[in-house]
Image 1 (cartoon, helix red, strand yellow):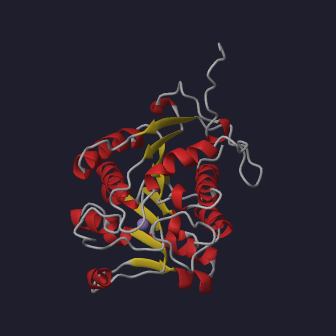
Image 2 (cartoon, protein in one colour):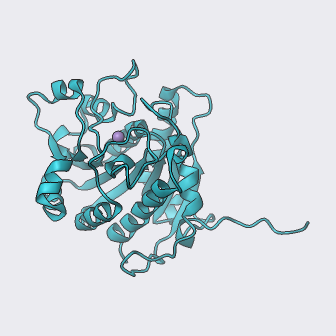
Image 3 (cartoon, helix red, strand yellow):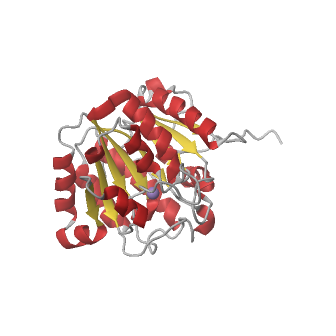
Length: 299
Ligand SMILES: [Mn+2]
């Protein structure tokens, strides 16, 4: 009785609920949507789970740099309610545009289809000077999956056909899965694909150099991180895991090697807490987020 309700400590204690996005360096937005998953669901629970563990980590990077200069506001979730996917995506695009114009937005999915409105918003602002780093086991270049052309496996196909973002400015990194319809789409196209096998053979710093070279003319770069980039042993809590992936260590080193690119925002998608073990996957996602802040938004 009479006990004050405690505000949750979020994002390494950096979250300040009084900040408006335009006063902040970073705004977090959860997108709890998993209706476009082709296989196992649960990614709608991702934002709250990742957020709930985000306060238990000190405001420092893994190498001891302070993050305390960063002003962070967690703006909560934008939930789909009973809206259609199209209507929900329109709302996500509008909100995302607002955040891109205010600070460095960090979106938490949800399944990877939420990157469709996020990339629409980013290309709406930066147009063909935008570059995209897609860290994923999959290309997400299908025309449709199970009749849904807004599936989480169709994200880059939809963006490519909208024609605003040059296809060769998307770097597909960590790929180890090809659908037949994706191979057909790729025929005769120049695509920047760095497969998991190629990364394994040539190393992380060579991979980062390739990405840098391919995006060197881009004024703005957006990072979309599908947690299934990681190996299922490192990140079991995801809908479509694919063996042959990376450790958290490798992901963090790759992100660090990419630092210096003009990153304007990021998302982390496909974390499914109900498929996870001891929150391994949520911890990996949380770490990737705050380390990216530290690498790309240094003091
Ligand atoms: Mn994906």
